[in-house]
Image (cartoon, rainbow, N blue to C red):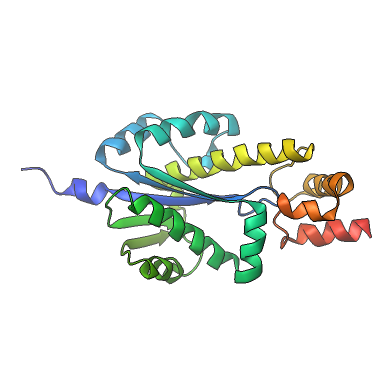
Length: 219
């Protein structure tokens, strides 16, 4: 008889990237892990993306995609700004993205359990899923990246974020730094000087305080 615990190993890990970055998209990834892929991810030394260099993340992501069913939802700055205007709440926007990533993956796999980082009321995600007629047990925990499935999702989300940030940088002809620092403000001013104020919304999350600081500096 096959031991039952392998059923409990099956889970979907969800994580996001770009939430604290002024430039670039918000990316949410969901990764399905079972007993076999859990061992493979361990061999690959998968861990929280914050502990891995950007170069290594970009190398690992294609391998994770090869072995694990996954879905990656990228909300580009323009779409992000539209959604934020409507929703006016980052946790609700995150919940919408988490639900979308989960829903997309559940079209390909059957799974009863998902794990994500603690960012707000889990009902927000479950309500969105319920509207689609999907039921899943969602576990939100602090430091969720210590779970292999969540760590794998964090790598896929970060890799997609980095690729898209690079693409946006080449589109505007200015290096768009990560985070929200004085270097980020300077890059925002460069974008406005080169392309006009309107263009900022196509590369940046406008509700950040950075926007106010940049505009005040240009006044």
